[in-house]
Length: 477
Ligand SMILES: NC(=O)c1ccc[n+]([C@@H]2O[C@H](COP(=O)([O-])OP(=O)(O)OC[C@H]3O[C@@H](n4cnc5c(N)ncnc54)[C@H](O)[C@@H]3O)[C@@H](O)[C@H]2O)c1
Image 1: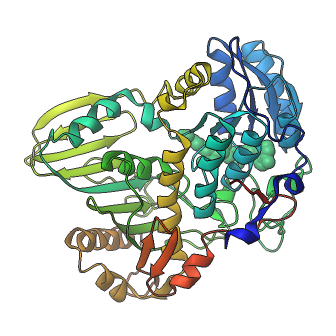
Image 2 (image 1 turned 90 degrees about the vertical axis):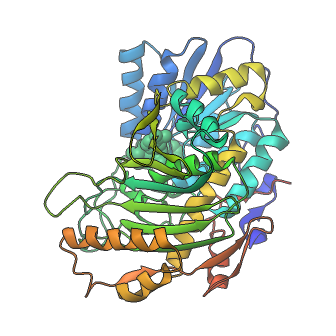
Protein backbone atom coordinates (compact mmCIF):
# COMPACT_ATOMS: atom_id res chain seq x y z
CA UNK A 1 0.00 0.00 0.00
CA UNK A 2 2.45 2.57 1.23
CA UNK A 3 5.37 2.02 -1.07
CA UNK A 4 3.47 2.82 -4.25
CA UNK A 5 2.54 6.21 -2.86
CA UNK A 6 6.05 7.23 -1.89
CA UNK A 7 9.16 8.38 -3.64
CA UNK A 8 12.59 9.51 -2.53
CA UNK A 9 12.51 13.13 -1.43
CA UNK A 10 14.86 14.35 -4.13
CA UNK A 11 12.80 12.91 -6.98
CA UNK A 12 9.46 14.03 -5.58
CA UNK A 13 9.57 17.77 -5.52
CA UNK A 14 11.47 20.67 -6.92
CA UNK A 15 12.03 22.16 -3.51
CA UNK A 16 15.10 24.28 -3.07
CA UNK A 17 14.95 24.14 0.71
CA UNK A 18 14.80 20.36 1.18
CA UNK A 19 16.32 19.18 4.38
CA UNK A 20 16.39 22.64 6.00
CA UNK A 21 15.54 22.80 9.68
CA UNK A 22 13.48 25.72 10.91
CA UNK A 23 15.33 28.82 11.98
CA UNK A 24 14.89 29.93 15.61
CA UNK A 25 12.60 32.94 15.40
CA UNK A 26 13.55 35.86 17.58
CA UNK A 27 11.88 38.79 15.79
CA UNK A 28 8.62 38.80 13.87
CA UNK A 29 7.21 35.46 12.77
CA UNK A 30 6.93 35.74 8.97
CA UNK A 31 4.05 33.77 7.53
CA UNK A 32 2.85 32.79 4.05
CA UNK A 33 -0.81 31.85 3.62
CA UNK A 34 -2.03 29.47 0.89
CA UNK A 35 -5.60 28.84 -0.30
CA UNK A 36 -7.22 32.25 0.02
CA UNK A 37 -10.81 32.03 -1.13
CA UNK A 38 -12.52 31.47 2.21
CA UNK A 39 -10.77 29.97 5.23
CA UNK A 40 -7.26 30.92 4.11
CA UNK A 41 -8.37 34.53 3.85
CA UNK A 42 -9.74 34.38 7.40
CA UNK A 43 -6.37 33.01 8.53
CA UNK A 44 -4.46 35.74 6.67
CA UNK A 45 -6.66 38.53 8.06
CA UNK A 46 -6.34 37.16 11.58
CA UNK A 47 -2.57 36.72 11.29
CA UNK A 48 -2.27 40.31 10.07
CA UNK A 49 -3.74 41.50 13.37
CA UNK A 50 -1.48 39.45 15.67
CA UNK A 51 1.40 41.33 17.30
CA UNK A 52 4.83 40.16 16.18
CA UNK A 53 3.48 38.42 13.08
CA UNK A 54 3.98 39.53 9.48
CA UNK A 55 2.11 38.11 6.50
CA UNK A 56 4.83 38.25 3.83
CA UNK A 57 3.44 36.04 1.05
CA UNK A 58 0.11 34.84 -0.30
CA UNK A 59 -0.45 31.85 -2.54
CA UNK A 60 -3.43 30.71 -4.59
CA UNK A 61 -3.75 28.73 -7.80
CA UNK A 62 -6.63 31.01 -8.83
CA UNK A 63 -4.94 34.21 -9.99
CA UNK A 64 -8.13 36.28 -9.62
CA UNK A 65 -8.51 35.23 -6.00
CA UNK A 66 -4.80 35.84 -5.40
CA UNK A 67 -5.00 39.35 -6.89
CA UNK A 68 -8.16 40.21 -4.95
CA UNK A 69 -6.83 38.97 -1.61
CA UNK A 70 -3.45 40.65 -2.10
CA UNK A 71 -5.22 43.95 -2.68
CA UNK A 72 -7.58 43.35 0.23
CA UNK A 73 -4.67 42.70 2.59
CA UNK A 74 -3.22 46.09 1.59
CA UNK A 75 -6.52 47.91 2.00
CA UNK A 76 -7.67 46.24 5.23
CA UNK A 77 -4.35 45.87 7.01
CA UNK A 78 -1.80 48.02 5.15
CA UNK A 79 0.23 44.87 4.48
CA UNK A 80 2.05 44.27 1.21
CA UNK A 81 2.59 40.59 0.48
CA UNK A 82 4.15 38.88 -2.52
CA UNK A 83 1.84 36.62 -4.51
CA UNK A 84 2.47 33.09 -5.82
CA UNK A 85 0.43 30.48 -7.68
CA UNK A 86 2.77 27.57 -7.00
CA UNK A 87 3.21 26.69 -3.33
CA UNK A 88 6.65 25.20 -4.01
CA UNK A 89 7.95 28.69 -4.83
CA UNK A 90 6.77 29.91 -1.42
CA UNK A 91 8.89 27.22 0.19
CA UNK A 92 11.98 28.60 -1.51
CA UNK A 93 11.54 31.96 0.25
CA UNK A 94 14.15 32.46 2.92
CA UNK A 95 12.07 35.07 4.73
CA UNK A 96 9.16 32.73 5.45
CA UNK A 97 9.18 31.04 8.86
CA UNK A 98 5.76 29.42 8.70
CA UNK A 99 2.96 28.60 6.31
CA UNK A 100 -0.78 28.57 6.97
CA UNK A 101 -2.76 26.22 4.72
CA UNK A 102 -6.38 26.96 3.82
CA UNK A 103 -6.22 24.79 0.72
CA UNK A 104 -8.64 21.91 -0.05
CA UNK A 105 -8.25 18.69 1.94
CA UNK A 106 -6.44 16.68 -0.74
CA UNK A 107 -3.51 19.13 -0.54
CA UNK A 108 -3.11 19.32 3.24
CA UNK A 109 -0.68 16.47 3.88
CA UNK A 110 1.51 16.99 0.83
CA UNK A 111 1.91 20.72 1.48
CA UNK A 112 2.61 20.01 5.15
CA UNK A 113 5.27 17.46 4.27
CA UNK A 114 6.92 19.73 1.73
CA UNK A 115 6.85 22.63 4.17
CA UNK A 116 8.47 20.56 6.94
CA UNK A 117 11.16 19.45 4.50
CA UNK A 118 11.79 23.08 3.65
CA UNK A 119 12.15 23.94 7.35
CA UNK A 120 8.87 25.86 7.69
CA UNK A 121 6.44 25.59 10.58
CA UNK A 122 2.90 24.72 9.53
CA UNK A 123 -0.65 25.65 10.49
CA UNK A 124 -2.82 23.26 8.47
CA UNK A 125 -6.56 23.40 8.25
CA UNK A 126 -8.64 20.42 9.31
CA UNK A 127 -8.82 17.61 8.45
CA UNK A 128 -5.03 17.44 8.77
CA UNK A 129 -4.95 14.60 6.26
CA UNK A 130 -7.01 13.14 3.43
CA UNK A 131 -6.12 9.46 4.04
CA UNK A 132 -5.15 7.16 6.89
CA UNK A 133 -1.75 6.67 5.33
CA UNK A 134 -1.07 10.41 5.28
CA UNK A 135 -1.87 10.47 9.00
CA UNK A 136 1.06 8.21 9.73
CA UNK A 137 3.49 10.29 7.66
CA UNK A 138 2.76 13.85 8.68
CA UNK A 139 3.52 13.63 12.44
CA UNK A 140 6.72 11.78 11.55
CA UNK A 141 7.77 14.65 9.28
CA UNK A 142 7.10 17.26 11.97
CA UNK A 143 9.29 15.35 14.42
CA UNK A 144 11.98 14.50 11.86
CA UNK A 145 12.41 18.12 10.68
CA UNK A 146 11.80 19.76 14.07
CA UNK A 147 8.82 21.77 12.86
CA UNK A 148 5.91 23.13 14.85
CA UNK A 149 2.76 21.79 13.18
CA UNK A 150 -0.68 22.73 14.47
CA UNK A 151 -4.03 21.88 12.88
CA UNK A 152 -7.01 24.20 12.51
CA UNK A 153 -9.12 22.28 15.02
CA UNK A 154 -9.59 25.45 17.01
CA UNK A 155 -12.05 23.96 19.51
CA UNK A 156 -8.94 22.71 21.31
CA UNK A 157 -8.28 26.34 22.27
CA UNK A 158 -11.85 27.07 23.40
CA UNK A 159 -11.53 28.30 26.98
CA UNK A 160 -14.87 26.76 27.96
CA UNK A 161 -14.05 23.32 26.62
CA UNK A 162 -10.55 23.49 28.11
CA UNK A 163 -12.23 23.75 31.49
CA UNK A 164 -15.16 21.41 30.84
CA UNK A 165 -13.39 18.41 29.35
CA UNK A 166 -10.84 17.81 32.15
CA UNK A 167 -13.71 18.30 34.63
CA UNK A 168 -15.78 15.64 32.84
CA UNK A 169 -12.81 13.31 32.59
CA UNK A 170 -12.20 13.67 36.34
CA UNK A 171 -15.79 12.57 36.99
CA UNK A 172 -17.60 15.93 37.33
CA UNK A 173 -20.78 14.10 36.32
CA UNK A 174 -19.68 10.65 37.45
CA UNK A 175 -18.34 8.10 35.01
CA UNK A 176 -18.60 8.98 31.30
CA UNK A 177 -20.60 6.25 29.56
CA UNK A 178 -21.04 7.27 25.94
CA UNK A 179 -20.37 10.15 23.58
CA UNK A 180 -22.79 11.19 20.86
CA UNK A 181 -21.30 13.60 18.31
CA UNK A 182 -23.70 15.40 15.98
CA UNK A 183 -23.24 17.57 12.93
CA UNK A 184 -26.61 18.87 11.78
CA UNK A 185 -25.93 21.58 9.20
CA UNK A 186 -27.98 22.28 6.12
CA UNK A 187 -26.24 21.13 2.97
CA UNK A 188 -28.54 21.67 0.02
CA UNK A 189 -28.23 20.01 -3.38
CA UNK A 190 -25.36 21.23 -5.58
CA UNK A 191 -27.50 20.57 -8.66
CA UNK A 192 -26.90 18.48 -11.72
CA UNK A 193 -24.72 19.21 -14.71
CA UNK A 194 -24.84 17.82 -18.21
CA UNK A 195 -21.29 16.81 -19.07
CA UNK A 196 -17.98 18.46 -18.23
CA UNK A 197 -18.09 22.05 -17.04
CA UNK A 198 -15.87 24.96 -18.05
CA UNK A 199 -13.04 25.64 -15.65
CA UNK A 200 -12.55 29.17 -14.38
CA UNK A 201 -9.89 30.60 -16.76
CA UNK A 202 -8.07 32.15 -13.81
CA UNK A 203 -7.28 28.73 -12.28
CA UNK A 204 -4.19 26.59 -12.87
CA UNK A 205 -6.12 23.32 -12.80
CA UNK A 206 -3.04 21.11 -12.70
CA UNK A 207 -1.97 22.83 -9.48
CA UNK A 208 -5.52 22.83 -8.13
CA UNK A 209 -5.79 19.04 -8.60
CA UNK A 210 -2.26 18.33 -7.34
CA UNK A 211 -2.20 14.73 -6.10
CA UNK A 212 -5.81 14.08 -7.17
CA UNK A 213 -6.68 12.80 -10.66
CA UNK A 214 -7.07 15.63 -13.18
CA UNK A 215 -10.61 14.77 -14.27
CA UNK A 216 -13.01 16.92 -16.28
CA UNK A 217 -15.03 19.07 -13.89
CA UNK A 218 -18.43 17.48 -13.18
CA UNK A 219 -19.99 20.11 -10.97
CA UNK A 220 -21.01 23.73 -11.36
CA UNK A 221 -18.50 25.16 -8.93
CA UNK A 222 -14.85 24.12 -8.83
CA UNK A 223 -14.38 25.87 -5.51
CA UNK A 224 -15.84 24.69 -2.21
CA UNK A 225 -18.05 21.92 -3.71
CA UNK A 226 -14.92 19.75 -3.96
CA UNK A 227 -15.96 18.73 -0.42
CA UNK A 228 -18.62 16.45 -1.93
CA UNK A 229 -16.25 14.32 -4.08
CA UNK A 230 -14.01 11.57 -2.74
CA UNK A 231 -10.92 12.58 -4.73
CA UNK A 232 -10.68 15.89 -2.93
CA UNK A 233 -12.97 15.81 0.11
CA UNK A 234 -14.89 13.45 2.36
CA UNK A 235 -18.33 15.05 2.53
CA UNK A 236 -19.58 16.62 5.75
CA UNK A 237 -17.70 13.88 7.63
CA UNK A 238 -14.44 15.57 6.54
CA UNK A 239 -15.83 19.09 6.34
CA UNK A 240 -17.52 20.17 9.60
CA UNK A 241 -17.17 16.87 11.46
CA UNK A 242 -13.35 16.82 11.89
CA UNK A 243 -14.05 19.34 14.65
CA UNK A 244 -16.63 17.22 16.47
CA UNK A 245 -14.75 13.95 16.01
CA UNK A 246 -11.74 15.75 17.45
CA UNK A 247 -13.87 16.65 20.50
CA UNK A 248 -14.65 12.95 20.87
CA UNK A 249 -10.96 12.03 20.99
CA UNK A 250 -10.20 14.88 23.35
CA UNK A 251 -12.93 13.70 25.74
CA UNK A 252 -11.57 10.17 25.57
CA UNK A 253 -8.06 11.36 26.42
CA UNK A 254 -6.70 11.11 22.85
CA UNK A 255 -6.55 7.32 22.80
CA UNK A 256 -5.61 4.95 19.99
CA UNK A 257 -8.17 4.57 17.23
CA UNK A 258 -11.39 2.60 17.65
CA UNK A 259 -11.37 -1.17 17.27
CA UNK A 260 -14.35 -1.12 14.92
CA UNK A 261 -16.51 1.16 12.83
CA UNK A 262 -19.90 0.75 11.20
CA UNK A 263 -21.50 3.48 9.11
CA UNK A 264 -24.93 3.68 7.51
CA UNK A 265 -26.23 6.57 5.45
CA UNK A 266 -26.83 7.95 2.02
CA UNK A 267 -27.24 11.03 -0.10
CA UNK A 268 -30.97 11.37 0.30
CA UNK A 269 -33.76 13.87 -0.27
CA UNK A 270 -32.38 15.13 -3.58
CA UNK A 271 -30.33 13.96 -6.55
CA UNK A 272 -27.30 15.89 -7.66
CA UNK A 273 -23.74 15.50 -8.97
CA UNK A 274 -22.10 14.86 -5.60
CA UNK A 275 -20.73 11.54 -4.35
CA UNK A 276 -20.61 11.85 -0.57
CA UNK A 277 -23.50 11.17 1.85
CA UNK A 278 -25.58 13.94 3.41
CA UNK A 279 -26.92 11.55 6.05
CA UNK A 280 -24.61 9.45 8.22
CA UNK A 281 -24.95 7.37 11.35
CA UNK A 282 -21.80 5.72 12.57
CA UNK A 283 -20.91 3.58 15.54
CA UNK A 284 -17.26 3.69 16.64
CA UNK A 285 -16.17 1.23 19.29
CA UNK A 286 -13.34 2.60 21.44
CA UNK A 287 -11.77 0.65 24.27
CA UNK A 288 -12.93 3.45 26.60
CA UNK A 289 -16.60 3.59 25.48
CA UNK A 290 -18.83 3.47 22.42
CA UNK A 291 -19.25 6.60 20.32
CA UNK A 292 -22.22 7.46 18.12
CA UNK A 293 -21.69 9.96 15.36
CA UNK A 294 -24.32 11.54 13.14
CA UNK A 295 -24.44 13.86 10.16
CA UNK A 296 -27.68 15.37 8.88
CA UNK A 297 -27.56 17.69 5.88
CA UNK A 298 -31.33 17.92 5.44
CA UNK A 299 -33.47 20.39 7.42
CA UNK A 300 -35.76 19.56 10.31
CA UNK A 301 -38.55 18.98 7.81
CA UNK A 302 -39.20 19.42 4.10
CA UNK A 303 -39.17 23.02 2.81
CA UNK A 304 -37.94 24.36 6.14
CA UNK A 305 -34.55 25.87 6.71
CA UNK A 306 -34.45 25.01 10.40
CA UNK A 307 -31.68 22.67 11.45
CA UNK A 308 -32.44 19.70 13.70
CA UNK A 309 -30.84 19.31 17.12
CA UNK A 310 -30.14 16.48 19.55
CA UNK A 311 -30.46 17.33 23.28
CA UNK A 312 -30.22 20.97 22.25
CA UNK A 313 -27.01 20.44 20.26
CA UNK A 314 -26.93 21.13 16.53
CA UNK A 315 -23.19 20.75 16.07
CA UNK A 316 -21.20 19.34 18.98
CA UNK A 317 -21.21 16.53 21.51
CA UNK A 318 -23.56 15.11 24.09
CA UNK A 319 -21.73 13.16 26.77
CA UNK A 320 -23.83 10.72 28.73
CA UNK A 321 -22.49 10.22 32.27
CA UNK A 322 -23.67 8.33 35.35
CA UNK A 323 -24.95 11.51 37.06
CA UNK A 324 -26.11 13.58 34.08
CA UNK A 325 -24.99 14.74 30.71
CA UNK A 326 -22.91 17.43 29.07
CA UNK A 327 -24.08 19.20 25.91
CA UNK A 328 -21.82 21.54 24.02
CA UNK A 329 -19.22 22.19 21.39
CA UNK A 330 -17.51 25.27 19.98
CA UNK A 331 -18.34 28.12 22.33
CA UNK A 332 -18.47 25.94 25.45
CA UNK A 333 -21.27 23.87 26.94
CA UNK A 334 -23.44 23.01 29.89
CA UNK A 335 -23.60 20.11 32.32
CA UNK A 336 -27.03 18.91 33.45
CA UNK A 337 -28.48 16.29 35.74
CA UNK A 338 -30.53 13.58 34.03
CA UNK A 339 -33.69 15.53 34.89
CA UNK A 340 -32.23 18.54 33.07
CA UNK A 341 -31.20 20.73 36.01
CA UNK A 342 -28.21 22.87 35.16
CA UNK A 343 -25.13 21.74 37.09
CA UNK A 344 -22.48 23.96 35.56
CA UNK A 345 -22.01 26.31 32.61
CA UNK A 346 -18.68 26.47 30.77
CA UNK A 347 -18.82 29.58 28.56
CA UNK A 348 -16.33 29.39 25.71
CA UNK A 349 -14.73 31.72 23.20
CA UNK A 350 -14.75 29.54 20.06
CA UNK A 351 -11.01 28.97 20.28
CA UNK A 352 -10.10 32.59 19.57
CA UNK A 353 -6.51 32.10 20.75
CA UNK A 354 -5.73 29.09 18.58
CA UNK A 355 -3.50 30.80 16.04
CA UNK A 356 -1.75 32.76 18.80
CA UNK A 357 -1.04 29.42 20.47
CA UNK A 358 0.71 28.30 17.26
CA UNK A 359 2.74 31.51 17.07
CA UNK A 360 3.73 31.21 20.75
CA UNK A 361 4.96 27.65 20.12
CA UNK A 362 7.10 28.88 17.21
CA UNK A 363 8.61 31.58 19.42
CA UNK A 364 9.33 29.22 22.29
CA UNK A 365 10.52 26.49 19.93
CA UNK A 366 8.44 24.04 21.95
CA UNK A 367 5.80 21.92 20.25
CA UNK A 368 4.68 20.70 23.70
CA UNK A 369 2.66 23.87 24.21
CA UNK A 370 0.49 23.34 21.13
CA UNK A 371 -3.22 22.84 21.74
CA UNK A 372 -3.71 20.81 18.52
CA UNK A 373 -0.37 19.20 17.67
CA UNK A 374 -0.26 17.31 14.41
CA UNK A 375 -0.02 13.88 16.06
CA UNK A 376 -3.32 14.48 17.83
CA UNK A 377 -4.98 16.16 14.85
CA UNK A 378 -3.96 13.47 12.39
CA UNK A 379 -5.42 10.84 14.74
CA UNK A 380 -8.65 12.85 14.85
CA UNK A 381 -8.72 13.08 11.05
CA UNK A 382 -8.44 9.28 11.07
CA UNK A 383 -11.92 9.05 12.57
CA UNK A 384 -13.30 10.86 9.51
CA UNK A 385 -11.45 8.45 7.23
CA UNK A 386 -12.65 5.37 9.16
CA UNK A 387 -16.30 6.50 9.09
CA UNK A 388 -16.07 7.21 5.36
CA UNK A 389 -14.27 3.99 4.47
CA UNK A 390 -16.93 1.85 6.18
CA UNK A 391 -19.52 3.72 4.09
CA UNK A 392 -17.55 3.52 0.84
CA UNK A 393 -17.17 -0.25 0.92
CA UNK A 394 -20.84 -0.65 1.89
CA UNK A 395 -23.74 -1.89 -0.16
CA UNK A 396 -27.15 -0.53 -1.03
CA UNK A 397 -29.91 -2.07 1.07
CA UNK A 398 -33.43 -1.11 2.04
CA UNK A 399 -33.69 0.36 5.54
CA UNK A 400 -34.64 -2.97 7.17
CA UNK A 401 -31.15 -4.54 7.10
CA UNK A 402 -29.53 -1.19 7.86
CA UNK A 403 -31.58 -0.87 11.05
CA UNK A 404 -30.95 -4.50 11.92
CA UNK A 405 -27.19 -3.97 11.75
CA UNK A 406 -27.46 -1.46 14.61
CA UNK A 407 -29.89 -3.50 16.68
CA UNK A 408 -27.15 -4.86 18.95
CA UNK A 409 -26.61 -1.33 20.28
CA UNK A 410 -29.61 0.25 22.04
CA UNK A 411 -28.59 3.89 21.49
CA UNK A 412 -27.54 3.08 17.92
CA UNK A 413 -30.91 1.52 17.29
CA UNK A 414 -32.73 4.53 18.74
CA UNK A 415 -30.57 6.88 16.68
CA UNK A 416 -31.50 4.90 13.59
CA UNK A 417 -35.21 5.30 14.45
CA UNK A 418 -34.72 9.06 14.78
CA UNK A 419 -32.78 9.13 11.50
CA UNK A 420 -35.66 7.35 9.76
CA UNK A 421 -38.18 9.84 11.20
CA UNK A 422 -35.95 12.70 10.09
CA UNK A 423 -35.82 11.36 6.53
CA UNK A 424 -39.59 10.82 6.47
CA UNK A 425 -40.07 14.42 7.67
CA UNK A 426 -38.06 15.44 4.62
CA UNK A 427 -40.33 13.53 2.28
CA UNK A 428 -37.95 10.58 1.83
CA UNK A 429 -39.97 7.40 1.54
CA UNK A 430 -37.87 5.15 3.73
CA UNK A 431 -39.84 2.09 2.66
CA UNK A 432 -38.65 2.56 -0.91
CA UNK A 433 -35.36 4.46 -0.65
CA UNK A 434 -32.14 2.55 -0.46
CA UNK A 435 -29.56 3.27 2.21
CA UNK A 436 -25.90 2.39 2.21
CA UNK A 437 -25.09 -0.17 4.86
CA UNK A 438 -21.38 0.14 5.45
CA UNK A 439 -19.12 -2.72 6.29
CA UNK A 440 -18.69 -3.37 10.01
CA UNK A 441 -14.92 -3.11 9.92
CA UNK A 442 -12.42 -4.19 12.55
CA UNK A 443 -9.50 -1.75 12.69
CA UNK A 444 -6.07 -2.47 14.16
CA UNK A 445 -4.73 0.99 14.91
CA UNK A 446 -1.23 -0.28 15.74
CA UNK A 447 -0.86 -2.19 12.49
CA UNK A 448 -2.85 0.51 10.63
CA UNK A 449 -4.93 -2.16 8.85
CA UNK A 450 -8.51 -3.33 8.67
CA UNK A 451 -8.51 -6.91 9.86
CA UNK A 452 -12.11 -8.11 9.49
CA UNK A 453 -15.55 -7.20 8.17
CA UNK A 454 -17.23 -7.65 4.81
CA UNK A 455 -14.87 -6.49 2.06
CA UNK A 456 -12.21 -5.44 4.56
CA UNK A 457 -9.53 -5.87 1.89
CA UNK A 458 -11.37 -3.29 -0.22
CA UNK A 459 -11.26 -1.06 2.85
CA UNK A 460 -7.50 -1.61 3.12
CA UNK A 461 -7.17 -0.41 -0.47
CA UNK A 462 -8.66 2.92 0.65
CA UNK A 463 -6.03 3.49 3.34
CA UNK A 464 -3.99 5.38 0.76
CA UNK A 465 -4.68 6.82 -2.66
CA UNK A 466 -3.07 7.07 -6.09
CA UNK A 467 -0.89 10.21 -6.19
CA UNK A 468 -0.70 11.95 -9.54
CA UNK A 469 2.90 12.59 -10.53
CA UNK A 470 4.75 14.81 -9.68
CA UNK A 471 2.53 15.36 -6.61
CA UNK A 472 3.62 12.18 -4.87
CA UNK A 473 4.35 11.87 -1.16
CA UNK A 474 7.96 12.19 -0.06
CA UNK A 475 9.38 9.23 1.80
CA UNK A 476 9.68 10.28 5.44
CA UNK A 477 11.52 7.83 7.67
N1 LIG B 1 -11.13 25.54 10.95
C1 LIG B 1 -12.31 25.86 10.46
O1 LIG B 1 -13.24 26.20 11.20
C2 LIG B 1 -12.53 25.82 8.98
C3 LIG B 1 -13.62 26.51 8.42
C4 LIG B 1 -13.77 26.46 7.03
C5 LIG B 1 -12.89 25.72 6.25
N2 LIG B 1 -11.87 25.06 6.82
C6 LIG B 1 -10.94 24.25 6.01
O2 LIG B 1 -10.24 25.12 5.14
C7 LIG B 1 -9.94 24.45 3.93
C8 LIG B 1 -10.38 25.32 2.76
O3 LIG B 1 -11.78 25.43 2.77
P1 LIG B 1 -12.52 26.62 1.99
O4 LIG B 1 -13.92 26.58 2.37
O5 LIG B 1 -11.74 27.87 2.21
O6 LIG B 1 -12.32 26.13 0.47
P2 LIG B 1 -12.41 27.01 -0.86
O7 LIG B 1 -12.59 26.08 -1.98
O8 LIG B 1 -13.38 28.11 -0.66
O9 LIG B 1 -10.96 27.69 -0.95
C9 LIG B 1 -9.81 26.96 -1.21
C10 LIG B 1 -8.80 27.88 -1.90
O10 LIG B 1 -7.59 27.13 -2.08
C11 LIG B 1 -7.08 27.43 -3.40
N3 LIG B 1 -6.16 26.34 -3.77
C12 LIG B 1 -6.46 25.11 -4.24
N4 LIG B 1 -5.33 24.38 -4.39
C13 LIG B 1 -4.30 25.18 -4.03
C14 LIG B 1 -2.90 25.02 -3.98
N5 LIG B 1 -2.33 23.88 -4.32
N6 LIG B 1 -2.15 26.05 -3.55
C15 LIG B 1 -2.72 27.23 -3.20
N7 LIG B 1 -4.05 27.46 -3.25
C16 LIG B 1 -4.83 26.44 -3.64
C17 LIG B 1 -8.31 27.58 -4.23
O11 LIG B 1 -8.07 28.25 -5.44
C18 LIG B 1 -9.23 28.36 -3.29
O12 LIG B 1 -8.97 29.74 -3.38
C19 LIG B 1 -10.65 23.10 3.99
O13 LIG B 1 -9.73 22.11 4.27
C20 LIG B 1 -11.65 23.26 5.11
O14 LIG B 1 -11.88 22.04 5.77
C21 LIG B 1 -11.66 25.11 8.16
